[in-house]
Image 1 (cartoon, rainbow, N blue to C red):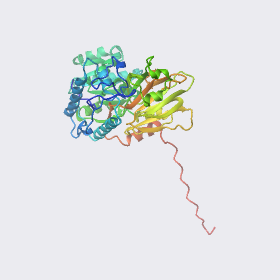
Image 2: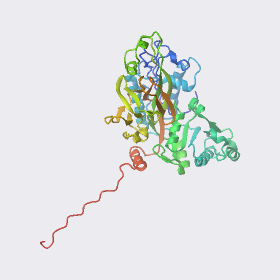
Image 3: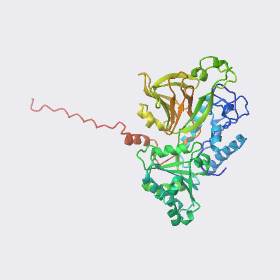
Length: 487
């Protein structure tokens, strides 16, 4: 594997385990799920058990004091070794990521979340000095004015005046864009002919380790798009504000040269933002002779009840990593959605509403806020659950720990299907019997922070962006009049 020196959280258990209805892997402990034959595994990539003993969680997290590129290289080599052990056949990076991202036991999920929080806390107080050679530029879509800014940054990075001959990747659509002017840029800087390259979605998904550093030019939507591109490992992401919102874009573009020079030479402070791993589970038609087929199917019974031997009720369809939220709603249907909500092995409730929003702390200021949910500081290890126009007055937003595994399903007797969207991008129909699993992701979003801006910065941002608790100050009371002259 290349030596990219990007940030990656690597937490590898060593073996597989038993199986239970739609929760874990196949019986054979030596069998790893193969995406080419999803029906041969029971199921949820998130609920599958990759288990064995975790041991002391601190063994997987290196002490960060004096953290350098060598330490990061060691982490990446450890991950590469684990990849080699798992690869019995030729697989893409995305397929390996989906194979390794299984649903963990309660203890494992808790240990994993603990490890990520511990690493994030250590990263708060140190600078990561990374050897940056390959830079990935992401440009705000649909805004022609940002293309000129992208050209300016690319030209500056490719200039011979830089101490390092950077390789710069820009989006493929800019290659023929007259505003970007790739041909003129190369004429002005002939040395960049083999260092200016182009990325597409497939390259970002399959070769994430190729990139050492990511720079986004746009607003929060551009940052979300970057998270969408990197569904596995996420290189450190530095975001310049060129959009309308600024929860995630912390850097002023007017000072980009000093910002990038300092970041590459002196290092960066990184905050690990919690992401969710979402697995779409499809209902399997049961065999004609199956005892379960003789009775009416019940989603609650299939997910938390006893399972008939050798009966696979569900199969995994797709795994997605999200930074903001997953929303299950009624879509184009005229009637409200009926949604079964589960936490771990418990049936929480049946929700009748226009939908439900499951948000990360980062996404608490997005759809979750509009639906009446709570605001949450991004460092909180929580999952926010907010109903969208619930058909009861008593359903209140709830906040759950990030060690819980949530499942949202469409009951078999629902009047219509529901639709799931992930970070507002991909929209997938869920038919009766299908469900979505949501859990803390093993791959957090590595967000670069400005120097000295952390604790109070989030409160300042919501005050500035949302006018949080902004109102005219109450007037003071006039002092009482004194009675003069004995009157």
